Image (tube, rainbow, N blue to C red):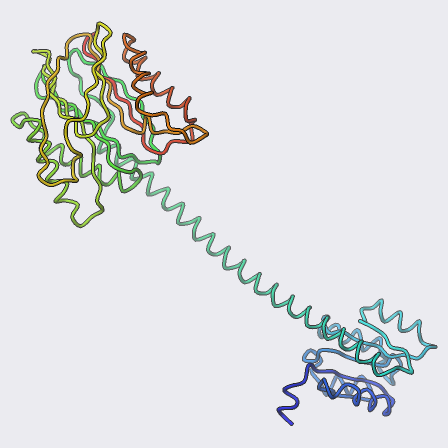
Length: 403
């Protein structure tokens, strides 16, 4: 008996004051459904938890609480339970009234078996769909609640990250202040744009005496927080190994070893670097270029000399060797340094500006004041790729000897 009831397709309550109607309805339905029958609404309410049933069948004319009142009582219990009312032909208006009040269907006496089965089947399907919809809506509300909670957490974390990046940016500005020491006869100008709040581009001036100084211009691989953290290591290396009594090639080799040893337990970044040592008294610049893309020396007479890389990247190969080169640097000359972000930006069609085009722009600006050259080069980058299409930090530094 338990197995039989477990296999039933649903539960039905029948209320009719006619024993024969109850018996007929029970006989028609009990092969498919679990059926309970009562002679009046009060007994049904006392004997059953109506909310646990799938369909209610009730006569409209009942002793005591009538069918319409019982319908309203069921709807209070569970508005999603379909109620089928049974009535005689003379009570058709009552049946229509029941439909207006929320009944699912009505059946006129005398009824046929198929009519009852079809009406109950449709009511069961409606009940099933309503319950499924309720379950789905509940699950959707739960998921929405979870998503709202997650979104609040993400927003809070984003706010924390923004604050942390702001702090990191301020700290980095302290590490790499954009303040150039006063060097007699030297003017500088700088334009830069970082992809994020913090940058991996670095430049440093070290004054040795009134006529000799060093310029270190570097670009850490990548951008954002990892590049900024690595740039702090590069800054430390510069402070440790760039000194009066150490040659350029030796200091570059020392920095290379320091960075390789320092990052053995960190990510494998590297840095491209230009180190120029200026001796203004003799009008000479000694330099080593470890991967910075062809800095330009713009001569007073209009010629342009590009200082191509002559050494491997710093911090990537052990026992790397770095070569020193010399070139003249006299009054009227201008040095333009730039990172690869200045020519790797792309236009709306994802075509990059390219190094050759950047160098062409440099040549065409020869003879112009240094400030104009740097401003025009940076403006050309912005014109080409727009203000929001930078893929790497962009730094352009100009250094002029003379008035």
